[in-house]
Image (cartoon, rainbow, N blue to C red; front, top):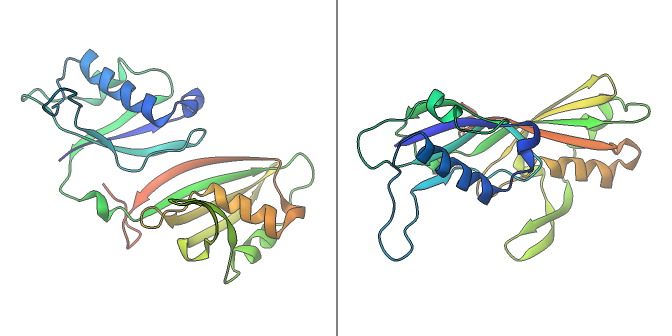
Length: 213
């Protein structure tokens, strides 16, 4: 199984998932490598993002699967030569691991404050609660959901003008957008509500918390 690991940072974070899919397919064509396509009246390339990324979120660990026609391989250098600023291929490799084995996501939330920064212990105490109910998008629309079972690990530390919240959350069935932790802070600890929140995906993990490739 062919996979690419790449990062999406800077201004590229505002690119939608569909635009990113088109960009990667175009990069293969410009690199002279032919993707395998389905048959029929509307053929589509066999490319798939293992964990689609929300608009506005950075990542240094995105994974994409693809299939090729022919034996010509692709390299990070060939793709990076035709990709725009902010999208950079880090690794091209073969894997036998199934996408369903990807179960967790490690992410960093940067909680920025214009004024005084709350004590990290206040956020830690909040995350230790047995229940954290927030409004979460589901297949049936928005619903009040307890996200605490989807939060597997966390660490909070202070930084100049900010708190850094590193977390491990469920990635699939069910999934938790790390940004909902900021929503939990706003609901349960409004005095510690950040003025701005940035999120960066750091690593994709399996059920045991080991790096997934």
